[in-house]
Image (spheres, rainbow, N blue to C red):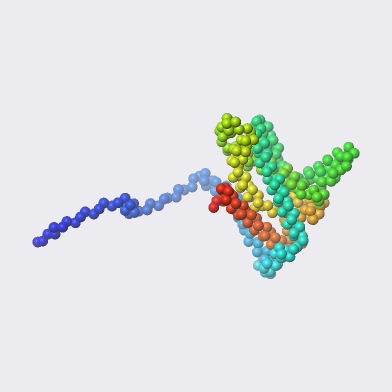
Amino acid sequence: MRFNSTREKPAAPPTAARVQHRQPEVRRRRRPLTRDQVLLVVIGLPGALALVLFHYVPLLGNVIAFQDYQPYLEITEADWVGWANFSFLWDGNPEFLNALWNTVALTIIQTVLVFPVPLALALLLNSLAGERLKRTLQSILYLPHFLSWVIVVALFQQMLGNAGMLNTFLVQNDLPIVQVIGAPELFKALVTSQVIWKDAGWGTIIFLAAISRIDQEQYEAAAVDGANARQRLWHITLPALKGLIILLLILRLGSSLSVGFEQILLQQGPVGLRASEVLDTWVYNNGILGGNWGTSAAAGLVKGVVGVLLVVGANKLAHAFGERGVYEK
């Protein structure tokens, strides 16, 4: 018998990488939802369904913008007209151009004057020493937000109308009356003041919540270094609120072409359409009252697309300045 003198070399021990590779993959089991998580889902489900049913499903109705739609016909039975309903964009429709100009003017005025007011109120309230006084003023400022525009317009008419409190006082003291309600040249100022009175107090909630999260040790350290109140505001408070200010400004631009439908519609009669017509009321007057459903739907679609483009553009600008914006890159 012949024996093979060469012995087989023992196999090299498997490396850690091989052992790890050979190990079967362990699938992570999904943990079942806890009772609190199930409760949160149940609570949030009605709101999510309402959001889908009343905000996303109606988007399918934008097909009316490309049809000669009539309310007594189904959408599938309406004649297809293509881009004919968008002719107001290039035909130079004077009514549409007037509504567009008033909308842009009110947007600029309200962005410049209305947007900073909640921030100023939040800084003012935060500087108050007495907690009871601060809460009392907060309640007073928040209250107008819960009033409907019908009540707000009625209150302003009772105060500033021709037979209101202001003119009654002027007449009793042999002074000339001041016509505010019904004056076309004062309509934009009137609308802006109403928005400030109604919604500025409510907007302070977000800024007050953000201010309360700022580390108080920063203010104490700045005070020790000799910084006064204005310097602490400029170098600590405002930089901490910069991200929130940019976020709210982006959201404001998204709804910038909606400057108050109900508020303006209630006050169009005394001042006329020349001074008060905006895009929302133009859509209502042409679509509901005038029967031009397709044209009105086209105007609403254009307004929505412009709003989305403004949000995307402003968000990219926020990214360029190093802020998160509405969404990250």
